[in-house]
Length: 243
Image (cartoon, rainbow, N blue to C red):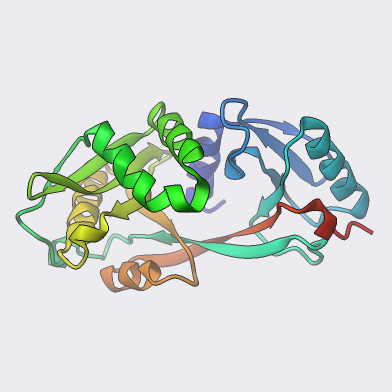
């Protein structure tokens, strides 16, 4: 198995209880954050049948969860009307040199002030996901994960979280305040996390949207694509085509 998959599965277990659902589906549930798609998805191994998708849909309706998400490590042959997307897993290989990355020496790295962290996330994620969900999600993640802050001009300019298991360190939720863009906040924070992971003997990796620009920055830094996660989501059950 690809090592990052083991770490991702352990990460999922921090928040979600998993149980076999059908021949090809495993159900994940986070009863403290039931409206977060990732924490309450169906993980598939192999192609689910029409009947399995019907059962999954009926289960979601019975729970009054107005979404259905499937995810796995191979594309589905049939997606049943769910909207598909990919997420890249990018690893920083041993030969990459974080010391060569351009950083801002005025940026200091430390534990973030949670009030500032929440304000930053509300500015960015609030319009996308709603203020209530954004706060609940951040507070849920902080129960289990280590957040890191990048300070510049006395303010929290950027943040991310990390979690380590199985010789790998996952970095995610990298966010830079728009007021501090183009001042090397992200690269400074990434370098600090890369150096910390290597001191701990871990391989740093992150997830990226193949359609978004951050993946290009990660590639220039030396991160390499080693895996893909395929995700299929529906939030309007009328659009499903299980037949």
